[in-house]
Image (cartoon, rainbow, N blue to C red; front, top):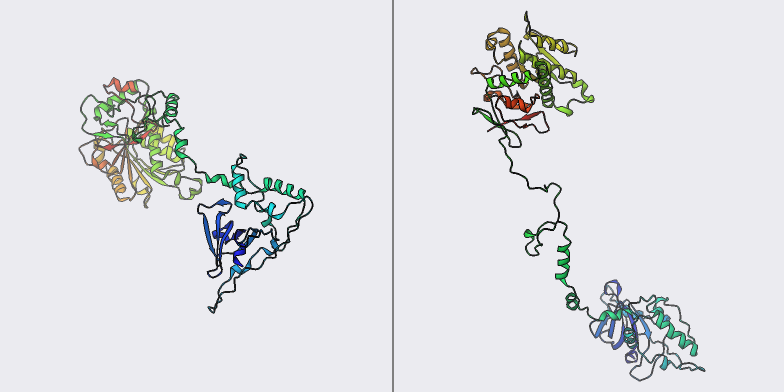
Length: 499
Protein backbone atom coordinates (compact mmCIF):
# COMPACT_ATOMS: atom_id res chain seq x y z
CA UNK A 1 0.00 0.00 0.00
CA UNK A 2 2.80 2.44 0.90
CA UNK A 3 4.55 1.76 -2.41
CA UNK A 4 1.51 3.08 -4.30
CA UNK A 5 2.37 6.62 -3.21
CA UNK A 6 5.94 6.61 -4.46
CA UNK A 7 6.44 9.39 -7.02
CA UNK A 8 3.50 11.39 -5.73
CA UNK A 9 3.89 15.10 -5.18
CA UNK A 10 3.01 16.09 -1.60
CA UNK A 11 3.14 19.14 0.65
CA UNK A 12 4.12 18.57 4.31
CA UNK A 13 3.43 21.23 6.92
CA UNK A 14 5.71 20.79 9.95
CA UNK A 15 4.49 23.81 11.88
CA UNK A 16 5.87 27.32 12.20
CA UNK A 17 9.29 26.11 13.36
CA UNK A 18 10.24 23.70 10.58
CA UNK A 19 8.03 25.23 7.89
CA UNK A 20 6.46 23.68 4.79
CA UNK A 21 8.21 21.15 2.56
CA UNK A 22 7.15 20.05 -0.93
CA UNK A 23 8.57 17.35 -3.07
CA UNK A 24 8.22 13.90 -4.60
CA UNK A 25 7.73 10.89 -2.32
CA UNK A 26 10.75 8.63 -2.54
CA UNK A 27 10.00 6.21 0.32
CA UNK A 28 7.35 5.50 2.97
CA UNK A 29 8.28 3.43 6.03
CA UNK A 30 5.26 2.32 8.04
CA UNK A 31 7.41 0.66 10.66
CA UNK A 32 9.39 3.75 11.66
CA UNK A 33 6.56 6.07 10.68
CA UNK A 34 8.69 8.15 8.30
CA UNK A 35 8.30 9.55 4.82
CA UNK A 36 11.10 10.77 2.53
CA UNK A 37 10.95 13.39 -0.22
CA UNK A 38 13.45 13.76 -3.01
CA UNK A 39 14.33 17.06 -4.66
CA UNK A 40 12.52 18.87 -1.82
CA UNK A 41 11.55 22.53 -1.61
CA UNK A 42 11.50 24.30 1.77
CA UNK A 43 9.08 27.25 1.92
CA UNK A 44 9.32 27.60 -1.86
CA UNK A 45 13.13 27.45 -2.01
CA UNK A 46 14.93 24.39 -3.28
CA UNK A 47 16.78 22.54 -0.55
CA UNK A 48 20.53 21.96 -0.93
CA UNK A 49 20.14 18.29 0.00
CA UNK A 50 18.72 15.76 -2.48
CA UNK A 51 16.43 14.03 0.02
CA UNK A 52 14.67 14.89 3.30
CA UNK A 53 13.08 12.40 5.74
CA UNK A 54 10.21 13.37 8.06
CA UNK A 55 8.85 11.64 11.15
CA UNK A 56 5.14 11.39 11.79
CA UNK A 57 5.66 13.23 15.08
CA UNK A 58 6.83 16.34 13.18
CA UNK A 59 4.10 16.39 10.53
CA UNK A 60 1.18 18.69 11.30
CA UNK A 61 -0.56 18.38 7.92
CA UNK A 62 0.10 16.40 4.72
CA UNK A 63 -1.48 17.33 1.38
CA UNK A 64 -1.29 15.26 -1.78
CA UNK A 65 -0.82 17.68 -4.65
CA UNK A 66 -0.33 15.20 -7.47
CA UNK A 67 -0.41 11.41 -7.65
CA UNK A 68 2.55 10.01 -9.51
CA UNK A 69 3.46 6.55 -10.88
CA UNK A 70 3.50 3.97 -8.12
CA UNK A 71 5.37 0.68 -7.95
CA UNK A 72 2.69 -1.03 -10.05
CA UNK A 73 3.42 1.30 -12.96
CA UNK A 74 -0.10 2.77 -13.05
CA UNK A 75 -0.38 6.52 -13.50
CA UNK A 76 -2.59 8.08 -10.87
CA UNK A 77 -4.85 11.09 -11.16
CA UNK A 78 -5.15 14.25 -9.14
CA UNK A 79 -7.28 13.74 -6.09
CA UNK A 80 -9.76 16.07 -4.50
CA UNK A 81 -8.19 18.05 -1.73
CA UNK A 82 -10.94 17.08 0.63
CA UNK A 83 -9.29 13.70 1.03
CA UNK A 84 -5.67 14.79 0.68
CA UNK A 85 -5.08 15.65 4.31
CA UNK A 86 -3.61 12.75 6.23
CA UNK A 87 -4.52 13.29 9.86
CA UNK A 88 -3.09 9.98 11.02
CA UNK A 89 0.48 11.42 10.86
CA UNK A 90 -0.09 13.47 13.99
CA UNK A 91 -0.42 10.55 16.34
CA UNK A 92 0.84 11.04 19.93
CA UNK A 93 1.21 8.78 22.92
CA UNK A 94 -1.28 9.26 25.69
CA UNK A 95 -0.35 10.25 29.22
CA UNK A 96 -0.54 6.64 30.40
CA UNK A 97 2.33 5.75 28.12
CA UNK A 98 0.20 3.73 25.73
CA UNK A 99 1.11 3.04 22.16
CA UNK A 100 0.58 5.67 19.52
CA UNK A 101 -2.47 5.88 17.35
CA UNK A 102 -2.48 3.85 14.17
CA UNK A 103 -0.72 6.00 11.58
CA UNK A 104 -1.41 4.02 8.44
CA UNK A 105 -2.15 6.27 5.48
CA UNK A 106 -5.78 6.70 4.49
CA UNK A 107 -6.77 5.14 1.20
CA UNK A 108 -7.41 7.78 -1.39
CA UNK A 109 -10.05 6.91 -4.00
CA UNK A 110 -8.67 6.82 -7.49
CA UNK A 111 -10.42 8.61 -10.30
CA UNK A 112 -11.54 6.75 -13.36
CA UNK A 113 -9.61 6.98 -16.59
CA UNK A 114 -12.11 8.80 -18.68
CA UNK A 115 -11.39 10.34 -22.01
CA UNK A 116 -13.63 12.80 -23.78
CA UNK A 117 -13.68 13.98 -27.32
CA UNK A 118 -10.78 16.25 -28.02
CA UNK A 119 -9.62 15.97 -24.43
CA UNK A 120 -6.36 14.97 -22.86
CA UNK A 121 -5.68 11.78 -21.01
CA UNK A 122 -4.60 12.08 -17.38
CA UNK A 123 -1.32 10.43 -18.25
CA UNK A 124 -0.67 13.13 -20.83
CA UNK A 125 -1.78 15.90 -18.51
CA UNK A 126 0.61 14.75 -15.79
CA UNK A 127 3.34 13.43 -18.03
CA UNK A 128 5.71 16.01 -16.53
CA UNK A 129 6.44 15.85 -12.87
CA UNK A 130 6.38 18.85 -10.58
CA UNK A 131 10.18 19.03 -10.35
CA UNK A 132 10.58 18.87 -14.14
CA UNK A 133 8.23 21.78 -14.59
CA UNK A 134 10.24 23.77 -12.06
CA UNK A 135 13.46 23.12 -13.94
CA UNK A 136 11.89 24.21 -17.22
CA UNK A 137 10.44 27.36 -15.72
CA UNK A 138 13.80 28.25 -14.16
CA UNK A 139 15.41 28.14 -17.58
CA UNK A 140 13.00 30.66 -19.04
CA UNK A 141 14.26 34.26 -19.28
CA UNK A 142 11.36 35.84 -17.44
CA UNK A 143 13.42 37.39 -14.64
CA UNK A 144 12.35 37.48 -11.03
CA UNK A 145 8.58 37.41 -11.32
CA UNK A 146 6.62 36.98 -8.12
CA UNK A 147 3.85 34.41 -8.35
CA UNK A 148 0.69 35.34 -6.61
CA UNK A 149 -0.85 31.97 -6.00
CA UNK A 150 1.74 29.29 -5.23
CA UNK A 151 0.14 25.90 -5.00
CA UNK A 152 -3.23 27.35 -5.81
CA UNK A 153 -4.94 24.08 -4.98
CA UNK A 154 -3.60 24.09 -1.41
CA UNK A 155 -5.17 27.49 -0.66
CA UNK A 156 -8.63 25.97 -0.51
CA UNK A 157 -10.17 24.39 2.52
CA UNK A 158 -9.91 20.73 3.39
CA UNK A 159 -13.57 20.06 2.55
CA UNK A 160 -13.60 21.80 -0.84
CA UNK A 161 -13.30 19.80 -4.06
CA UNK A 162 -11.59 21.29 -7.07
CA UNK A 163 -13.92 20.94 -10.06
CA UNK A 164 -12.45 19.18 -13.11
CA UNK A 165 -13.09 20.22 -16.64
CA UNK A 166 -12.46 17.94 -19.57
CA UNK A 167 -11.62 18.70 -23.13
CA UNK A 168 -8.90 20.46 -25.06
CA UNK A 169 -10.04 23.85 -23.81
CA UNK A 170 -9.41 22.72 -20.27
CA UNK A 171 -5.85 21.68 -21.15
CA UNK A 172 -5.09 25.00 -22.81
CA UNK A 173 -6.45 26.95 -19.84
CA UNK A 174 -4.41 24.76 -17.50
CA UNK A 175 -1.20 25.64 -19.35
CA UNK A 176 -2.04 29.33 -19.19
CA UNK A 177 -2.73 29.09 -15.48
CA UNK A 178 0.63 27.41 -14.92
CA UNK A 179 2.41 30.16 -16.79
CA UNK A 180 0.61 32.89 -14.85
CA UNK A 181 0.27 31.44 -11.37
CA UNK A 182 2.86 28.68 -11.32
CA UNK A 183 5.68 28.67 -8.76
CA UNK A 184 9.12 28.82 -10.29
CA UNK A 185 10.64 32.15 -9.50
CA UNK A 186 12.78 30.96 -6.58
CA UNK A 187 14.68 28.39 -8.62
CA UNK A 188 16.95 31.06 -10.00
CA UNK A 189 18.30 31.50 -6.48
CA UNK A 190 20.08 28.17 -6.85
CA UNK A 191 22.87 29.88 -8.74
CA UNK A 192 25.63 31.10 -6.42
CA UNK A 193 26.45 34.80 -6.59
CA UNK A 194 29.97 35.42 -7.85
CA UNK A 195 31.32 37.85 -5.25
CA UNK A 196 34.90 37.72 -6.47
CA UNK A 197 33.93 38.38 -10.05
CA UNK A 198 31.76 41.37 -9.18
CA UNK A 199 34.40 42.73 -6.81
CA UNK A 200 36.96 42.61 -9.60
CA UNK A 201 34.71 44.91 -11.65
CA UNK A 202 35.09 47.67 -9.00
CA UNK A 203 38.08 49.88 -9.77
CA UNK A 204 39.02 51.15 -6.32
CA UNK A 205 42.02 53.12 -7.53
CA UNK A 206 39.89 55.15 -9.94
CA UNK A 207 37.28 55.90 -7.27
CA UNK A 208 39.87 57.07 -4.74
CA UNK A 209 41.51 59.19 -7.41
CA UNK A 210 38.19 60.86 -8.12
CA UNK A 211 37.61 61.55 -4.42
CA UNK A 212 41.04 63.07 -4.02
CA UNK A 213 40.61 65.29 -7.06
CA UNK A 214 37.31 66.66 -5.71
CA UNK A 215 38.75 67.49 -2.30
CA UNK A 216 37.76 71.06 -1.49
CA UNK A 217 40.78 71.88 0.54
CA UNK A 218 43.21 70.77 -2.15
CA UNK A 219 45.71 69.57 0.42
CA UNK A 220 47.91 66.50 0.18
CA UNK A 221 46.48 63.16 -0.80
CA UNK A 222 44.61 61.19 1.78
CA UNK A 223 46.27 58.34 3.52
CA UNK A 224 44.33 55.12 3.34
CA UNK A 225 46.54 53.29 5.79
CA UNK A 226 46.67 54.31 9.42
CA UNK A 227 43.49 56.22 10.45
CA UNK A 228 45.62 58.47 12.65
CA UNK A 229 47.47 59.70 9.56
CA UNK A 230 44.35 60.67 7.63
CA UNK A 231 43.99 64.37 6.84
CA UNK A 232 40.55 65.82 7.70
CA UNK A 233 38.70 67.32 4.74
CA UNK A 234 37.11 70.15 6.73
CA UNK A 235 37.99 72.30 9.70
CA UNK A 236 36.15 71.90 12.97
CA UNK A 237 33.85 74.66 14.19
CA UNK A 238 36.36 75.59 16.91
CA UNK A 239 39.48 75.35 14.71
CA UNK A 240 41.17 78.45 13.37
CA UNK A 241 41.84 78.67 9.65
CA UNK A 242 44.95 80.76 10.13
CA UNK A 243 47.77 79.36 12.15
CA UNK A 244 47.65 80.86 15.65
CA UNK A 245 50.60 82.62 17.17
CA UNK A 246 52.01 81.32 20.44
CA UNK A 247 50.22 82.72 23.49
CA UNK A 248 52.15 85.32 25.49
CA UNK A 249 51.09 85.05 29.11
CA UNK A 250 53.18 87.96 30.39
CA UNK A 251 51.40 90.86 28.74
CA UNK A 252 51.77 93.34 31.62
CA UNK A 253 55.29 94.56 32.33
CA UNK A 254 56.01 97.03 35.14
CA UNK A 255 59.10 99.28 35.26
CA UNK A 256 60.47 97.68 38.41
CA UNK A 257 60.41 94.10 39.58
CA UNK A 258 57.29 93.41 41.57
CA UNK A 259 57.35 91.96 45.04
CA UNK A 260 54.45 89.64 44.22
CA UNK A 261 52.84 88.29 41.07
CA UNK A 262 49.36 86.96 40.41
CA UNK A 263 47.78 85.04 37.56
CA UNK A 264 44.28 84.98 36.11
CA UNK A 265 42.12 81.93 35.40
CA UNK A 266 43.40 81.93 31.80
CA UNK A 267 47.05 81.97 32.93
CA UNK A 268 47.89 85.62 32.25
CA UNK A 269 50.49 87.03 34.63
CA UNK A 270 49.43 90.16 36.54
CA UNK A 271 52.31 91.73 38.51
CA UNK A 272 51.71 93.81 41.61
CA UNK A 273 52.85 97.42 41.87
CA UNK A 274 53.85 99.59 44.79
CA UNK A 275 51.47 102.09 46.33
CA UNK A 276 53.56 105.01 45.03
CA UNK A 277 53.29 103.77 41.42
CA UNK A 278 49.59 103.09 41.91
CA UNK A 279 49.05 106.61 43.25
CA UNK A 280 50.91 108.12 40.29
CA UNK A 281 48.83 106.03 37.88
CA UNK A 282 45.58 107.37 39.38
CA UNK A 283 46.93 110.92 39.30
CA UNK A 284 47.81 110.73 35.58
CA UNK A 285 44.37 109.22 34.84
CA UNK A 286 42.73 112.10 36.72
CA UNK A 287 44.68 114.60 34.64
CA UNK A 288 43.25 113.00 31.48
CA UNK A 289 39.68 113.27 32.77
CA UNK A 290 39.17 110.20 34.97
CA UNK A 291 38.10 112.27 37.96
CA UNK A 292 37.64 111.06 41.52
CA UNK A 293 33.85 111.04 41.09
CA UNK A 294 34.14 108.74 38.06
CA UNK A 295 36.55 106.49 39.90
CA UNK A 296 34.23 106.30 42.91
CA UNK A 297 31.32 105.36 40.66
CA UNK A 298 33.27 102.63 38.85
CA UNK A 299 34.59 101.25 42.12
CA UNK A 300 31.10 101.25 43.63
CA UNK A 301 29.62 99.41 40.64
CA UNK A 302 32.35 96.75 40.54
CA UNK A 303 32.32 96.24 44.31
CA UNK A 304 28.52 95.98 44.40
CA UNK A 305 28.54 93.42 41.57
CA UNK A 306 31.03 91.32 43.48
CA UNK A 307 29.02 91.69 46.70
CA UNK A 308 25.77 90.67 44.97
CA UNK A 309 27.50 87.57 43.65
CA UNK A 310 28.79 86.71 47.12
CA UNK A 311 25.28 87.15 48.53
CA UNK A 312 23.86 84.48 46.22
CA UNK A 313 23.24 86.31 42.97
CA UNK A 314 20.09 85.29 41.07
CA UNK A 315 19.42 82.40 43.45
CA UNK A 316 18.96 84.77 46.38
CA UNK A 317 17.80 88.07 44.91
CA UNK A 318 14.48 87.12 43.32
CA UNK A 319 10.96 88.58 43.72
CA UNK A 320 9.94 85.44 45.62
CA UNK A 321 12.61 86.07 48.28
CA UNK A 322 11.66 89.62 49.23
CA UNK A 323 10.94 88.38 52.75
CA UNK A 324 14.55 87.12 52.98
CA UNK A 325 16.44 90.19 51.84
CA UNK A 326 20.18 89.98 52.61
CA UNK A 327 21.72 92.38 55.12
CA UNK A 328 25.11 94.04 54.59
CA UNK A 329 27.06 95.99 57.20
CA UNK A 330 29.25 98.70 55.67
CA UNK A 331 32.14 99.98 57.82
CA UNK A 332 33.61 103.21 56.40
CA UNK A 333 36.21 105.73 57.52
CA UNK A 334 36.50 109.48 56.75
CA UNK A 335 38.67 109.11 53.64
CA UNK A 336 38.55 108.20 49.94
CA UNK A 337 38.34 104.47 50.72
CA UNK A 338 35.30 105.24 52.87
CA UNK A 339 33.70 107.16 49.99
CA UNK A 340 34.22 104.11 47.76
CA UNK A 341 32.39 102.00 50.33
CA UNK A 342 29.47 104.44 50.51
CA UNK A 343 29.16 104.31 46.70
CA UNK A 344 29.07 100.51 46.89
CA UNK A 345 26.38 100.66 49.61
CA UNK A 346 24.23 102.94 47.43
CA UNK A 347 24.24 100.44 44.56
CA UNK A 348 23.50 97.56 46.93
CA UNK A 349 20.53 99.42 48.40
CA UNK A 350 19.22 100.04 44.89
CA UNK A 351 19.20 96.25 44.40
CA UNK A 352 16.90 95.58 47.38
CA UNK A 353 19.71 94.83 49.84
CA UNK A 354 19.36 96.06 53.43
CA UNK A 355 22.47 98.18 54.03
CA UNK A 356 23.60 99.43 57.44
CA UNK A 357 26.30 102.11 57.00
CA UNK A 358 28.66 102.88 59.86
CA UNK A 359 30.49 106.22 59.59
CA UNK A 360 31.83 108.07 62.65
CA UNK A 361 30.90 111.72 63.18
CA UNK A 362 33.48 114.29 62.16
CA UNK A 363 33.28 118.05 62.16
CA UNK A 364 34.67 118.29 58.65
CA UNK A 365 34.21 115.64 55.97
CA UNK A 366 35.71 115.24 52.52
CA UNK A 367 33.61 116.62 49.70
CA UNK A 368 33.49 113.18 48.07
CA UNK A 369 32.07 111.66 51.27
CA UNK A 370 29.49 114.44 51.64
CA UNK A 371 28.18 113.97 48.10
CA UNK A 372 28.09 110.19 48.43
CA UNK A 373 26.22 110.42 51.75
CA UNK A 374 23.63 112.69 50.13
CA UNK A 375 22.96 110.08 47.44
CA UNK A 376 22.98 107.21 49.93
CA UNK A 377 20.35 108.97 52.05
CA UNK A 378 17.90 108.77 49.13
CA UNK A 379 18.07 104.96 48.94
CA UNK A 380 16.41 104.27 52.29
CA UNK A 381 19.53 102.69 53.73
CA UNK A 382 20.31 102.99 57.43
CA UNK A 383 23.25 105.13 58.62
CA UNK A 384 24.71 104.86 62.14
CA UNK A 385 27.65 106.58 63.82
CA UNK A 386 28.04 104.28 66.83
CA UNK A 387 29.02 100.64 66.96
CA UNK A 388 26.20 100.05 69.47
CA UNK A 389 23.69 100.73 66.69
CA UNK A 390 25.08 97.98 64.47
CA UNK A 391 23.07 94.72 64.28
CA UNK A 392 23.50 92.33 67.19
CA UNK A 393 22.80 89.29 65.01
CA UNK A 394 25.16 88.07 62.28
CA UNK A 395 24.67 89.76 58.92
CA UNK A 396 25.16 88.24 55.46
CA UNK A 397 28.25 90.26 54.54
CA UNK A 398 30.58 92.84 56.09
CA UNK A 399 32.30 95.34 53.76
CA UNK A 400 35.41 96.84 55.33
CA UNK A 401 36.47 100.34 54.22
CA UNK A 402 37.99 101.48 57.52
CA UNK A 403 41.63 101.53 56.42
CA UNK A 404 43.40 104.29 54.51
CA UNK A 405 46.59 104.18 52.49
CA UNK A 406 48.00 107.30 54.12
CA UNK A 407 46.23 108.13 57.40
CA UNK A 408 47.53 105.27 59.49
CA UNK A 409 46.93 107.18 62.74
CA UNK A 410 43.22 106.36 62.45
CA UNK A 411 43.97 102.85 63.64
CA UNK A 412 44.46 104.27 67.13
CA UNK A 413 41.03 105.89 67.31
CA UNK A 414 38.44 104.31 69.65
CA UNK A 415 35.75 104.15 66.96
CA UNK A 416 38.17 102.26 64.67
CA UNK A 417 38.98 99.64 67.31
CA UNK A 418 35.35 99.25 68.27
CA UNK A 419 34.28 98.75 64.65
CA UNK A 420 37.12 96.28 64.02
CA UNK A 421 36.20 94.29 67.13
CA UNK A 422 32.56 94.17 66.06
CA UNK A 423 33.54 92.87 62.60
CA UNK A 424 35.80 90.18 64.05
CA UNK A 425 33.14 89.04 66.54
CA UNK A 426 30.44 88.89 63.87
CA UNK A 427 30.22 85.58 62.01
CA UNK A 428 29.72 87.16 58.59
CA UNK A 429 32.49 86.99 55.94
CA UNK A 430 34.39 90.21 55.25
CA UNK A 431 35.07 91.90 51.91
CA UNK A 432 37.79 94.60 51.96
CA UNK A 433 37.69 97.27 49.24
CA UNK A 434 41.05 98.74 48.21
CA UNK A 435 42.95 97.56 51.30
CA UNK A 436 46.26 99.31 52.04
CA UNK A 437 49.72 97.78 52.17
CA UNK A 438 51.35 98.47 55.51
CA UNK A 439 53.67 96.81 57.94
CA UNK A 440 50.90 96.66 60.51
CA UNK A 441 48.76 93.60 60.92
CA UNK A 442 45.29 93.81 59.45
CA UNK A 443 42.79 94.81 62.12
CA UNK A 444 39.97 92.95 60.35
CA UNK A 445 40.69 89.59 58.78
CA UNK A 446 39.12 89.56 55.33
CA UNK A 447 37.98 86.64 53.20
CA UNK A 448 38.14 88.63 49.97
CA UNK A 449 40.02 91.78 48.93
CA UNK A 450 39.22 93.94 45.89
CA UNK A 451 42.05 95.89 44.21
CA UNK A 452 41.67 98.70 41.65
CA UNK A 453 43.39 98.70 38.24
CA UNK A 454 46.49 96.73 39.27
CA UNK A 455 46.94 94.79 42.51
CA UNK A 456 49.11 95.75 45.45
CA UNK A 457 51.38 93.19 47.15
CA UNK A 458 48.84 92.27 49.83
CA UNK A 459 49.63 89.93 52.74
CA UNK A 460 48.04 86.52 53.18
CA UNK A 461 45.66 87.90 55.80
CA UNK A 462 43.95 89.88 53.03
CA UNK A 463 42.28 86.70 51.78
CA UNK A 464 41.58 85.95 48.16
CA UNK A 465 42.48 88.82 45.86
CA UNK A 466 40.16 90.16 43.14
CA UNK A 467 40.88 92.86 40.58
CA UNK A 468 38.36 95.34 39.14
CA UNK A 469 38.55 97.52 36.03
CA UNK A 470 37.96 101.19 36.85
CA UNK A 471 38.35 102.39 33.26
CA UNK A 472 41.99 103.52 33.05
CA UNK A 473 42.98 103.79 29.33
CA UNK A 474 45.96 101.85 28.00
CA UNK A 475 47.97 104.94 27.11
CA UNK A 476 47.68 106.16 30.69
CA UNK A 477 49.56 103.03 31.76
CA UNK A 478 52.20 103.88 29.18
CA UNK A 479 52.57 107.35 30.74
CA UNK A 480 53.86 105.68 33.91
CA UNK A 481 56.08 103.19 31.98
CA UNK A 482 53.74 100.20 32.31
CA UNK A 483 53.27 97.95 29.29
CA UNK A 484 49.64 97.00 29.69
CA UNK A 485 47.15 94.66 28.00
CA UNK A 486 43.79 94.22 29.66
CA UNK A 487 43.50 90.88 31.51
CA UNK A 488 39.75 91.29 32.15
CA UNK A 489 38.37 89.82 28.94
CA UNK A 490 34.57 90.10 29.07
CA UNK A 491 34.39 90.83 32.81
CA UNK A 492 34.95 93.83 35.06
CA UNK A 493 35.93 91.80 38.13
CA UNK A 494 38.31 88.82 37.89
CA UNK A 495 39.93 86.60 40.52
CA UNK A 496 43.71 86.53 40.94
CA UNK A 497 45.81 83.60 42.10
CA UNK A 498 49.14 83.88 43.88
CA UNK A 499 52.05 82.40 41.93
